[in-house]
Image (cartoon, rainbow, N blue to C red):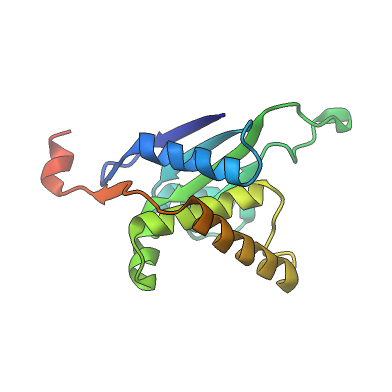
Length: 164
């Protein structure tokens, strides 16, 4: 199992090893312990561009998931890969939503990671209300299973960002 993690934000200090270990626990919990996952934490501007390009919605969103196994190559051939897909999360949105919901940044980030991985596994809350309820139940169960959530993200001060 491999987690390919990329963080391109200076406003946040992310304990990447801890986040990767959490993602590994999550993959095991969904029965994908031999799969690989690409996880990227980005800002709202980049998330807005991705959302506009792939979903035709011109606004940032919290999480996008890009399944690899659902892809079909020319002549109807499916790719053979251990890569489950890509999960992209907007960290500034994570911070806002955590504050609004009265949750920790780490809990909110974990919920969005769970949400994205479930999308990669074929869940789709936008399909119909029954599927949305099924996905929500699975999200809660997985969150409980991989808890406690470790401390992974802190906001950096302007001074800390300048000294990098």
